[in-house]
Amino acid sequence: MKDMILQVSMGNIIEDELMSSSVIKDLKPLDFDYVPEELLHREEQLRFLAQMFKPMLSRITQNAIIRGPVGTGKTVIAKKFCNSIKNLARKQGYIIEYVHINCRKRSKDAMALLGILNHFDSRFPDRGFSVQEMLEVLRKQLKKREAHLLVVLDEVDALVKKSKSDLIYNLTRFSDESYKEKVPISLLLISQKDIIPMLDSSSISTFKRSNVLLLDKYTREELYNIVRQRIDLAFHNNIVNDDSIDLIADIASEWGDARFAIELLWKAGIAADHQHLQIVTPEHVRAAKAETFSVITETKLKNLERHQLITLYSIAKRLKKDGTAYVSTGEAEKTYAITCEEYNEKPRTHTMFWNYLKEIESAGFITIKLSGKGHLGTTQLISLPDIPAEVASDKVKDLLD
Ligand SMILES: Nc1ncnc2c1ncn2[C@@H]1O[C@H](COP(=O)(O)OP(=O)(O)OP(=O)(O)O)[C@@H](O)[C@H]1O
Ligand SMILES: [Mg+2]
Image (cartoon, rainbow, N blue to C red; front, side):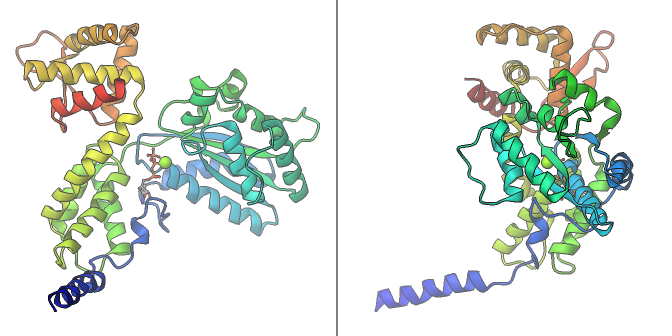
């Protein structure tokens, strides 16, 4: 009898939760892969891409790079643009095949190539073919279809860094005039970092600086509008109050990262659902921030290179030891040299150290400001605005070890 009552009430709990209404009317627009109809604050950048790739419509290949910090819309702008040019070409009777490869997921030449071949033949075997053979198959496919291939290599630094990749060189050679069986391939490389120096010399001249679209971090106002747009698409009317949107924009503006803003919005919605409320309040946003933060920090840390990690570790260690709010860049550099010794690494030059500082600043881990009173000349001070020094130093140490 008791069991039965328990079963009934548990059934009720499950049913209640499953059937309870949600503040979210459609989850899709909150997905990271979702491409909204309208990209806000990127009109000029879309225009720039269109100008750069216009020759493709006259069957001339083009190559370009999109670069910018995390969550600045690199992937979404590429998807939007490439689909548009593909559709427009099709209306003119010209076939552009657009393939988007994420090189963090496919970080070797063979894997990336397989991704391209799968676009033409989803059953293409994933082993048994060498890179050279796969390139030949690709050439035949393009010849047969009389198609122009537009390949986006997204997060391309993962490819170039890991495998001493020849893929970019090989693909650009396809459309080389002097090559016997020329087929048109245009490439769009996407990266957070400047990848030009990581390319081979022939690719460097292909991707000369003038073909780079630089995306800036979003401002607070831009993030506000991006969040508003997602609310209209994903939430029921009048659910997210203005204060909550303000707070999301405030929090995300430190990084200028639209993905972070959208993630906060989504998680705040879930937090409201958990309380069966029909409104999303700043308290839900704060809860979302607390939850997201540790995950974000971790993924971002994994993106740092070893010397950037050593630099960050040195700063955190120093702040923890001194118990101060700031450490000067001079002191940080001294600690960096000592930490390098601990890890059997050769300290890099002063200029390189500065680059590391700038990079971990743009990744949002530290802030650097000019000192006020009490310091000599142009001393710059570093602080860790968001993570306790102890947590940062432990996390980074784990990665270094
Ligand atoms: N201008 C915009 N208008 C509307 N939504 C945007 C805009 N820019 C970015 N987004 C959204 O923000 C999220 C992050 O954008 P995206 O994935 O393009 O960033 P990214 O620059 O490729 O980041 P990463 O360097 O981490 O790959 C996506 O959900 C995207 O749809
Ligand atoms: Mg991306």
